[in-house]
Image 1: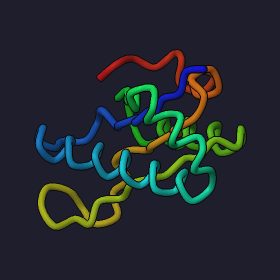
Image 2: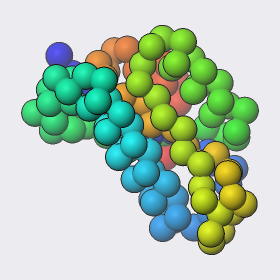
Image 3: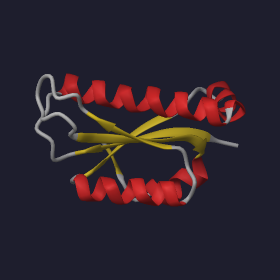
Image 4: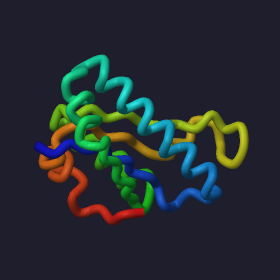
Length: 117
């Protein structure tokens, strides 16, 4: 079985590469920790396969919220990341979501049409 973690970011935000990388890292850590609490076995399997991570993008907040809703409806572990607003964007700005780690085929049903960042 193949497992992965997907991070979906908003392409419409005017933020630097470093800030974007930080938001992606937040999503990866939060999604993994949440999944670890729910199902440690899946996290262990994902890690044993190399802890595959993929970063995809959507054009704006509406599209991100649509992906988030679909993942939640499919009972896939999904976290939403909001920025603290200390540097480049307003406090509470939703920047990205983390989906998984979970079975690749389950996540691909939600994110399979999105493009790599």
